[in-house]
Length: 322
Image (cartoon, rainbow, N blue to C red; front, side, top):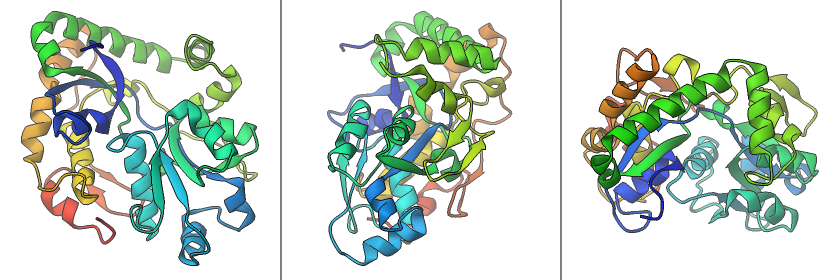
């Protein structure tokens, strides 16, 4: 109750809804705030041993020379799920083959610098910061794991939304409009980076933020590229719509990794939490088009397609799982 609304990891909301991320509480997702723009960073110590991608990392871990530790930002959150999915896609079980720990985003780089972890998954600017500080490199971006994946959402408790429907709708419309403004031009993205870099917010160099906001990537291994699937905040409303299939995906991964014991009613829970009714009203007020379906389909890095049609079967289909 200390916060009315928050910029929050998608999977964290569902962790609270399911009672596996603290006390169970009915939650609401009003919209998706962004897609893409996260990454997995590996340490320069791994690079020195020849581990620069998933396959070479798996080969190194298989030697069992020592224990390897990887960090994410919240046990049911997005970064944990991207990290686990990527490791598992290369045959590494994140709960059996390595140790995984939870570290707040601003502390990732400092912890890697002193050797507390071998890799981490987090949002920007911390992956780029690790490169600038010469302690790590980008092994994979999350958009390479899942192009246009959902990331942060606008979250509230269900109780707050029920008591404040007009505020929920107005706030959602305003943030849809803000996302549209950010994506409208490179100048607007630069202004956004300058703002959030200030001491009042992220407190880092604007250059560290803006490069990856603009999709100008360097991985710390000598490769540079312009990424058309960098962080997105609007994309004609395709970013901001709270797709039911996106919500269900996080629950399937919670089931895959044993964070929940039994399969929930995936679609029913998603419909309860993702307030598509409020979003549609807000989008209409903001003059934003709506997608044709509440579900969408994507092929992830391991070639497996997720379309939300049979979440129970999907959750049980993975070779590497809890």
